[in-house]
Amino acid sequence: MNPLLEAQNVAKHYPGVIALDGISFTARKGKVLGLLGPNGSGKTTFMRIASGQSSPSSGRVLIEGELPDSKTRSRISYVPENNHLYSWMSVEEIVGFFEDLFPGFERQRVEELMELMQLPRKVRIKNLSRGIYNRLKLLLGICWGAELLLLDEPLSGVDPASREKILEGILKGCGEQGFTIIVSTHLVGEVEPLLDDVVFLEEGRVKLQGDCDDLRKQFGLSLDQLLRREVV
Amino acid sequence: MREFIDLMLKELKGDRNTLFTLFGLVIGFFLLSILLRELNLDNIYIASLFILTLLFGAFPLIYFLAGYDLFKREWKEGTIALWSIVPVKPWKLVGSKITAVFIEFLVIGISLSTAIVVLIWPHTSHRAEFGEIFISTVLLFIQSHFILLPLAAIAAALYMSGTNFAKYGGLVRLISGFLLLWAIIIVERLVDIGTMSLVYAEVPYLESVQINGGTFSVAFPESISLSLVLILYLTGILSFILGGKLLERRVLP
Image 1: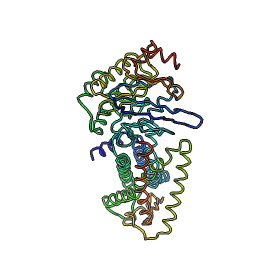
Image 2: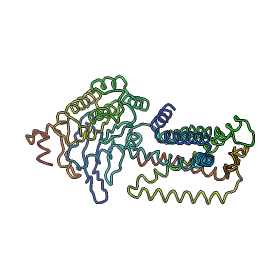
Image 3: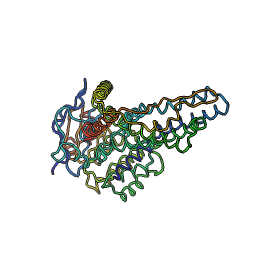
Image 4: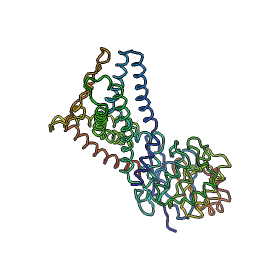
């Protein structure tokens, strides 16, 4: 199967810090790839490069053979870990804002997902709990027809009940839309059922990568156990 | 066009702090002036009028700071990440923000003009009609407003120029700002193509207002160098284009 995203020897250096040290992997079309690793392993740095928010010091990321630019931007939906939505808007207002700006916005689907994820419409974003805020970010990330969804730590700081809702949303988004998803997280156990492929990062390097089923068979361990053994 | 209007409305709704602060200052000094007048505290009343009129003179600085803050705010709050996924041309993002500043300050400026005219009109010696004074004051503000508009684009581009230099960003902006100011002054002196009259010159009612023996004078300039206006616009347009490019290359993929 053709890769939608291809990382070729991607490195990112900051003064005194090597955030990424020449990582290479591919994300297959229509599959969910887990970018796993402890805090500080370079997951967010890679997500920012893949979304085009940052440039690699060397190497490159290709989206179906093209470097990230204004054309690929309309195909990638990046949901960062940090807050990126206008805190003064209400849930209803930010949904309307996205509807006005994204030509492929699917109102009907959003209405269904808002019900599923139990999002309050009138509440301002600054007053949302972490869990509900993350559900909203996910909803806005999957509602406008992007082909590649980059989810940076979608479960970080979220209570177990909200995690279920978020995972349900990802599953629904992926299953029905055929998204290619790259999800970065250190909560491996939670996302393991979603993943098709996995890349373990440690200190900016790829420690292990491959098809999840193959790795489980090869090592006789779950991904969570494997991460603990190999990386943590 | 709809995207542009949506973005501009978002900007106007979101930037309530600047709007409310400036509007509050105008209303506050207006009410204070009325109170002081009623209490016959003429000297303090004149001082209050003076401060209110100073706001008029502070608009170039306010314009510059508002333009500088347009993208700084997005960076600080992390909402700049939203722009990396919004499929809108960078010039629309920059243009909608500058248009919002223009509309915002137009509203504040007209309120300020109204407040000044209401307070000063009873004391004018020219016996001009209230309507005539009001219209000329508002027109003066609108004219100044158009002259100052490029400052917002220049300030926005200055901020953008430092976004890719991490801890040296402030220094890059400072140096860019000084170089730009120096270039504007030099070119303005070299190119003398006459002056442009300001609306104020038509109705010089504020030159000297007598308030119970005290005198309140305002020294508004009657004209402005035409080359300065043209240079400001030329720099503003170049900054607008540069701002869009910087946003596209450095911030957006």
